[in-house]
Amino acid sequence: MSQIVVIGAGQAGASLVGKLRAEGFEGSITLLGAEDGPPYQRPALSKAYLLGEMERERLFLRPRDWYEGNDITLRTGTRAVSVDANARTVTLEGDEVLTYDHLAFTTGSHPRTLPAAIGGELDGVFTVRDLADADALKPEFVAGRKLLVIGGGYIGLEAAAVAAKMGLHVILVEMMDRILQRVAAPETSNYFRALHGSHNVDIREGVGLDRLVGDDHVTGAILSDGSKIDVDFAIVGVGIYPATLLAESAGVVCDNGIVNDAYGRTSDPHIWAAGDCATLDWHGQQIRLESVGNAIDQAEIVARNMLGANQVYVPKPWFWSDQFDTKLQIAGLNIGYTQIVTRENGDARSHWYFRDETLIAVDAMNDPRSYMIGKRLIEAGKSPAPSVIADPKTDMKALLKS
Image (cartoon, rainbow, N blue to C red; front, top):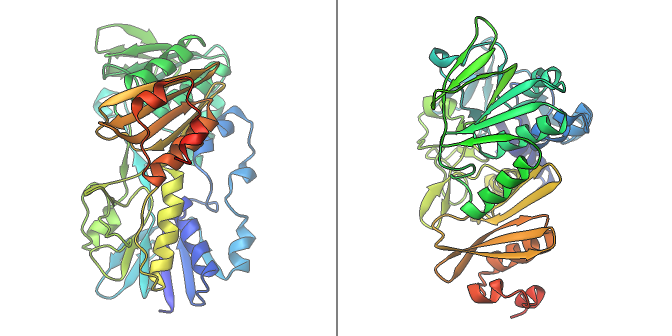
């Protein structure tokens, strides 16, 4: 193997090429990124970067000269338009053709947008997925302005928190019965509803958007309950979908993501995938993990397996979200939970998810100790009884030794 091409210069792509060099690969590495700058961290875009607490250069995962120093060809502002899996070539805009021995898709995901028929193409309607989105949004965050956030997931809630901290009037609408309904228990939804309410964010659940109004620029919205509101701009946070178009055109099997085996290899033996765009096996079902942790870990396993390690990827899911002065840390996946156990200690609070008697996930709010203990228990396959977790007298650290 002498030539590796990686399409997608995000967290997964940067981690993959770095691991290839760390593992001693001496061949050619090309990392292709459609954006102009080097790979950067995305979670800060909807938090510290929008707040002005983080400079652009601090977003970069590594300085540009690191890639040159490690003999990695980083081509930014470069878009791949097709992959010929039989010829093992990648065609770029401008018809330049690259050859590869092995190829990795780390193409990430795209934000879902609103249809033009309901105002999705009006000026002043934004998503928050990349640096260009955040840069376009920054001038809009002026105290006293009116913001409509569409979608009560983590991205929407984080954007709402930033806006409220900067003195904007914020209305957030969630068409489902409660915020975070797809990803968290009612107890966690209740916690964040109260948190946002204490900062004057107007959360409306069970209410969708009928349409945005305005001539060229959004000026208002009509909601599904018939209410009308004036807005200066809107942020759409209604989820993401995997960037699989190139993989599909190359004949690679895709199903809500690029389908991988346990080693990160796709249906083509010379093509691999990692990060938001890729699926993985989770207890017998194919899922995608949309997280920084997975992007790093899966990409590094793919890099090692490209070099012949044959190492099965065992995901260890973890996530986080910063809203106002609360840090939410999540360990595990709560898929199929049957009961919730709550622990409180002052401002610290944690929700422990059980599937019958098996501990599967923890949501910890301003409670890093519970997060770390829960994460270690889940990874070790240990499940204290729910009654033990619920008992405020339980020495949680001792559970790790049992």
